[in-house]
Amino acid sequence: MQCEDAFDISSITETEDMGLHQRELQNKTADLGFTLFFELPTACSPLIVSPSWKAILGLIESHSNKKDVGSPVVLVCGGKNVGKSTFARYLTNTILNTQKPLYYLETDVGQTEFTPPGVISLTKVDAPIFG
Image (cartoon, rainbow, N blue to C red; front, top):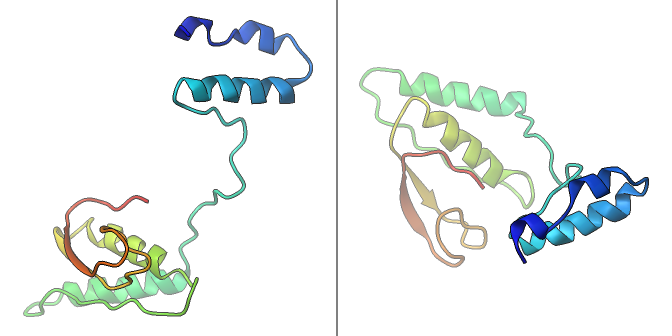
């Protein structure tokens, strides 16, 4: 199938049943290696940073700015599904704005950030973590 033959936009805009054509368009674009979304999936939501997260970050930054003090060491712990990984990613990315590199000791072998599951690792991080 040639790219220009994949779909015809004019035929889609001239019809009233857009739901059907949206599905057809998604199927055709999937064959080309991508998928069009007409609405954001409900699973996507913005990251809302709580005041407590900001306060903890402020404490870490104020400690880091003191003279004769080494780099901060932070242990993130908590129960299941409370946002430990999200907080660690937020903390790492924010600290990277002022301090590079940092080292991330990964001990949650069930939900790893940098390695395959089942591996404990120490990773040098010098770029933001997306994921």
